[in-house]
Length: 104
Image (tube, rainbow, N blue to C red):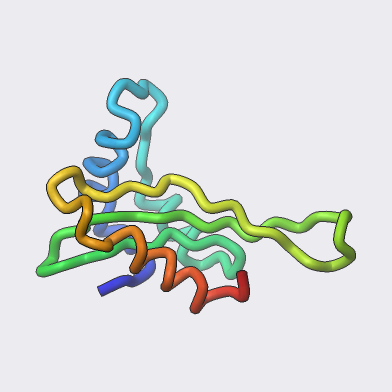
């Protein structure tokens, strides 16, 4: 199942981010920030979950710009799939969900 991240996902998301940036001293996943992202209509932190385990995440930020009138653009980042579940189309499913959320 793909869904927006919840506050209670903090530890599992933090563990995935540790795989993404293992030596980062700045990594600090906050429950409050997850909640802010969830409630912001222009920002998305999606998780891919199976049987209660979060196997992947993807972040989408919708940004304003002046180059193309009122057309925004999106920044996709913090894409991570648990190292034991890579090659199982988790990433592709996350991208497909992004396309359903916004018109990319």
